Length: 219
Image (tube, rainbow, N blue to C red; front, side, top):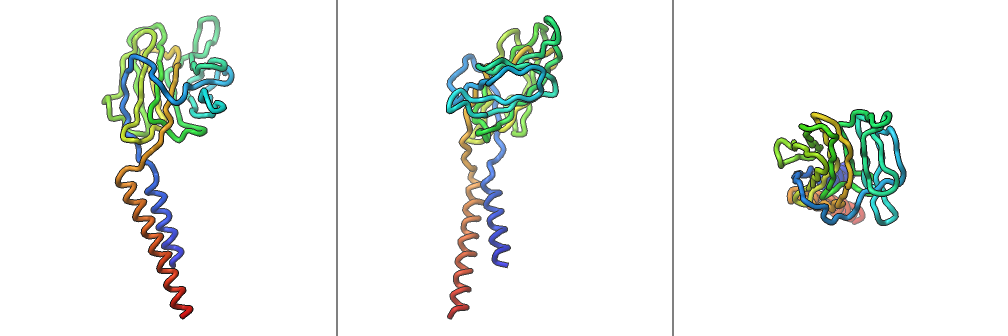
């Protein structure tokens, strides 16, 4: 019975230690800024639906996975550029969506920057979604201008962004590039700390009770 209670307390402790979902804010910065990692590719990929990106330091650790329901191409080694798949000379496949997921050494991000370049059509817009809660703007939809469109996605209150999806309507994505990230160092919220403390107290009490019972049996 004692071991069962200890197991329950341990499970409660693990649950309490789980980071809360992040509150996400999306803004449009005027510059690139400074980040832990610029995301790179180690080789060129063609006609793919998933590819891994790497940081530009520390032996190029894997930190992100790009995936889509559409097919896309990527740049060779160097700055990560994800672009429409070229079917024939200046004829491209539809490329409307992309998901960026933390992978490798990254458990999540505190900040993520990307640049969306639409195709030559006008009237395109992008809508962001995430397992985390996007609190600003609501709805998270932006009009896209010709050329560069930088977006900074920030997880507030020391929380963690684990995944971000974008979907372009009214046209196609020409490319997504200049992806940069700050890796997250999540700090538990107050309620999480309380659950952790209760878990530790429960484990300590049961261990103390077990020692007392053992002493009484030996007396």
